[in-house]
Image 1 (cartoon, rainbow, N blue to C red):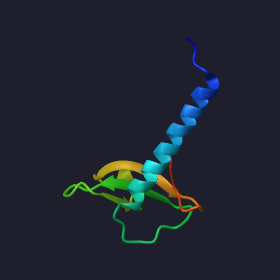
Image 2 (image 1 turned 60 degrees about the horizontal axis):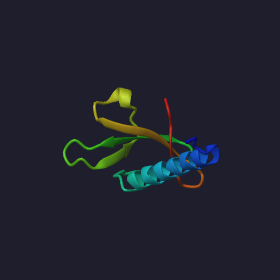
Image 3 (image 1 turned 30 degrees about the horizontal axis):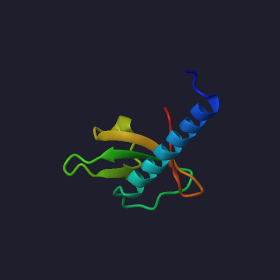
Length: 84
């Protein structure tokens, strides 16, 4: 049976929306001690001691923390993942 291209496209859009929602939940639940600036790039790490995520301006190449991902804050106050 052939898959319907419209359903495949809809599934891809749904999966992307779910990932964006999960990323935003993770980042807004992370620790950070600064006010993120719209348009700037931030890096998400997993804490060594407690495993809690934290947001930083420090690039992964400059530290040895457990890197999770790189994100940019949009004008809608949503986090979007940045690909390398």
